[in-house]
Image 1 (cartoon, helix red, strand yellow):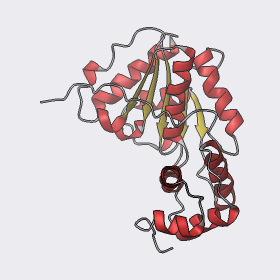
Image 2 (cartoon, helix red, strand yellow):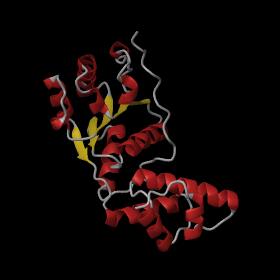
Image 3 (tube, helix red, strand yellow):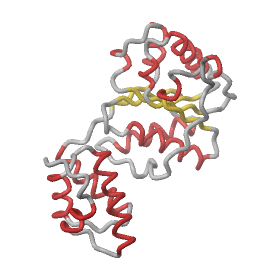
Length: 235
């Protein structure tokens, strides 16, 4: 039995366009805001590897849509793979659609046909859409050539995974947004002794923030060791 379409995801309020940091952050924010304001491209594809910020930006779009009082539906393709594609086309004109990990639907012909029709509606001005994929759409194995050409019709933005030099700067900005007082020495310790993946580092910052507030402690290297003793990777 084919599952019905799951409800749209609830967006994560921790993510916004304002707290997206990258070398091209101003350009990315401008293009996404223009999609919602109807002054820019109605179809935007975000592509990049793990920790490049795709999911952050899709949640940020949901946050911005709520601010603009616009209808926005956010889905992850992992939700959709086993669901009924025929139930995924009833979106009212003016709706903005967000789909994370769209490349997971490549090779599923019924889903490819659904998104081909949805993007036709975008071209006709009925809908707007922002999607994410793990690599350039021209390199993804979609079986429907017309879908690939439709995806390439939109504005494609390549997102870069933070390099070592920029990771510390990015984490310091994120920590400041959380109200965390963290020294350069403590930040260097985090990056030297634990996973350097941005998503892992952010989860550790959230844990440190919660622990520091509940125990009224400063974030020192001994406090980091004590709080994250089960997280250490040994690198």
